[in-house]
Length: 585
Image (tube, rainbow, N blue to C red; front, side, top):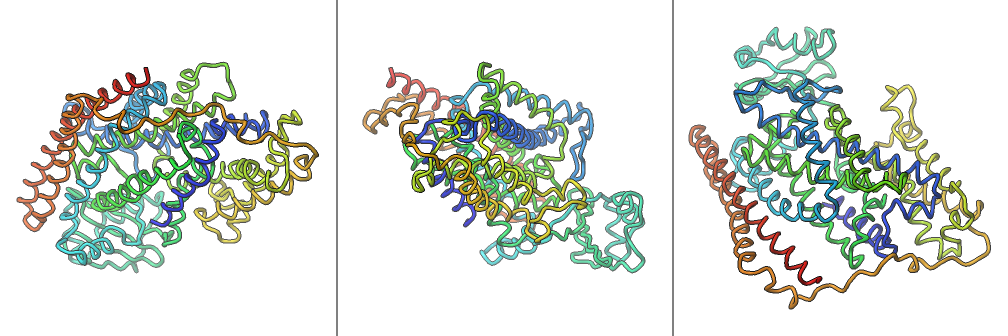
């Protein structure tokens, strides 16, 4: 909650005020400050990193599609990538990713207006589906009749503090040996295969039965494994040592969107805002899209015991509606990300049409998505992504706000007609050398100074930002920013003024009777999406047959409510857009 609050304040107090004053994308504004030559390099890096982020989201959507296709007997089984897969796991994965990528590219090419309309329809429905999946899943984890029960489940079954890496599966017949305190030979072979052919268990390994028939723990020196039943198989996972505490989570919640708020990439969106206070609307994304949705995803994912498979998670929790939710959740992140990537790359080829650049960015994104490494290592990638772009964000913020206070000349690089801003280039290089996790790419043979000091990857950006700000101030003063002469006021950079907002009186009653009926039906469908999982939750999971029957009915009802919602919401959105067009004319 604290990390998401800091993220909201970063959008509202850092990104939105600059965007609404200059009415430019970051990519064109950066050109004035860091010079056209450096801006080409920066925007190329920015665009490629956006492509990688979009690729991860295409992977999420593809997971849902694969889960849906695997439910059809007439279609050959498509293998989903595992946690350690770096290359495409099969031709099925490749074909699904290419198909999903084509749809994402088409929607991104449609432009900003289409993105906003797409989000306006999808977003209100996603949150009830996430909540529905969490409520329907809780009975599978144990008895939950009070807040104390919920806390107990959270600590023992959901957020246990033990990050797991799946290493293999066993037949359910192995449960008999495990309950009798015997380590099955198949388990040793599974761990041996995961360890690259080396024996993974010693003769001194200790087996503990935590819950007969469903959960066992094996301790072997400094290694620890958890063996747990999952559906019709037994999943073997290794307990990792890299555990995340309060500060890790708080900082990650703050900086997982670092490139878009402190890094200023969301200037591309906020340049349309009527006021900088629109930055506070990011709270809906942070507390519904991050805090709420992540908590629900944690509950739904707990039954998979560490398996990274969003499609399987959603299918088990909410059926076809859940699969559709995961598909659209990936799309609603991938599409604007590709849109941003296109804007970043367009500054390199300004004479090319935007749709051409977006097509190229989408093609790169789709090709990267074929390799599931980023999809499976998303937390580390997001950290590296934000850390890489952060220094230039600090440079732009300092030159925009701080230079006038210190009587330094903003846009001094542009005034001197330099290709590169030398102070910005040196700042970027120095901060990356100090902070970038080079050790992750060299197997630890080469380490960054931050790694030598024991600073976790999630914490590096904050000292790095202050270092970048201070270093740029000093370097810029001695490299040309302190020369005599006045600077243009920032307000003169405004590209256009925004029209006055439409008053409520003007907006009221313009969508027509059909629009209001459709809107009411859409709201009723959303209410049904919340009532259905409550029936499953209140029914509990003590009687397996009754619970299964309740879940089947709930999934069918959720799908029907989803179809009704989308039909009604599309009609409502269409009436609303027609009314807006009439008002503008």
